[in-house]
Image (cartoon, rainbow, N blue to C red; front, side, top):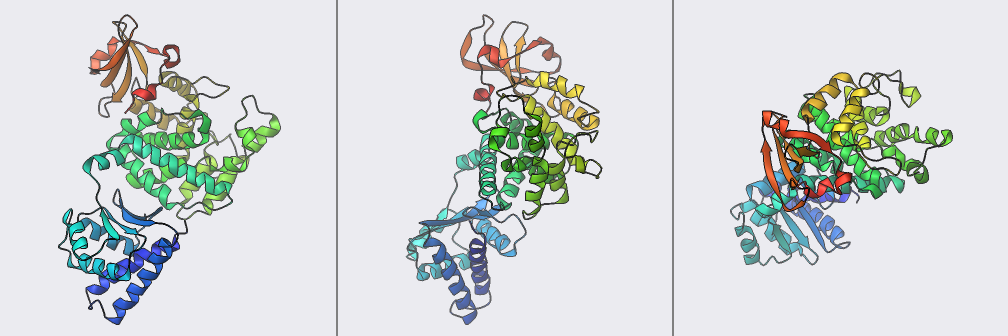
Amino acid sequence: MNQELPKQIVQGLAGAVKGLRLYPLDHPANTRQMELLVDRLFTMLRRQDTVRLGLLEGTLFLEEVLFVDDNPAAVEIGQLLGKLQIDGLEFIHGVTALELRHLLQVLHDGRARGDHFSEVLHAHGVHHIRPIMVRKDDVDDLHSPRAVYKRALAVVDRIFHDVRMGAIPTSNEAMATVKSMVHMTLTEPHALLAMSMLKDYDNYTFTHSVNVAVLALTVGRACGLKENQLRILGLGALLHDIGKLQIDWDIINKPGQLTDEEFEQIKRHPTNGADIVRKMEGMTPEIIDIVLGHHLRYNREGYPADARGRAASAMVDMATIADTYDAMTTLRSYQRPMTPKSAISRLEELSGTVLHPEFLRNFIRFLGPYPVGTLVRLTNNEIGLVIWVSTEQPDDLRLKILFDSDGEMLTEPRIEELAGPDTIRITAEVDPFSKGINVTDYLD
């Protein structure tokens, strides 16, 4: 969607609301603002049945456009919705200029709040504008790790579609989604980390991009990055493979070993991606660094060769760890996935050459001895899945017991807590493939 029309609608609404603080509704200054609002809103409603304006995790949106920057009009409307205790407004095809005038009067008055807002609109004869009210359960769903993960997948899908169509993708939605991912990484890091165990093998490039963003944020948090730095890291990781869209898809998905010529094409994707990202709005040098340098390796002997000698952000090395870990733990036609613990052992072998030693140590320490998503066998022969790891004490675990001591799958998994020394009850890691288990079926 073209962003200009939504921006004009938000500006028109904010201007009309502010104008009422200075002049009566029929003052020429307010009349001009009303005409702007009516013209832009009606233009959009000629193309669709409804237009939704509201707040998503504190960020104003109008349909698909999110106002993640400090747009004064968007800030004004966002604050107003908050004061009125509503989550947004829905404008329905057939709305009239008179209904918009009544809406402005109600907004200006400010006394109709929450559930009462709808009643006041109806009392004024407004039937084509209604408030958006989100129930608490809906809010919880919107903020759940799985919901955040799915939104990230949808964003990547739209960005990749734009690139295939030859368009420069918009960045607002991606920025807003990464903001949500960062918030969750800071508050419930292992919950979002569990979602990175989700693997869609038919859409590997999409899921890999989101998983690398989740894992990169985990690395960044383990290394003590601040929130604004995490947002940069997360966005760069989300976009790191965007350049693959300009590579022959048959080569990207080839099940066997690549020829030298095919690998040379693959090696172009960081440069292709950096070229795309440079054209996107709001991209920082660090984000471009991540896209360009995620295959450079810690020793800078990777590719692209012409980027080896340039200084790069430390976030490049954090993204490389995430990219490597997700590739190891993902099923491919040519590769059986490693278990989390096996992947960590392999990462340690790459420390100092491919991977940054200090950043890797921080990441492994944060994951704990048994990362979320690890299937383990206990001393009593029960088998359980690690579903939670304490941020403060990585030895404190929560398991879902899936198999009893006789090897029979439980009808209802049982929760068991292991604290500190109790982890000696874990005797071994179990390969989920050997038990026919898809671990993500058991992760919330």
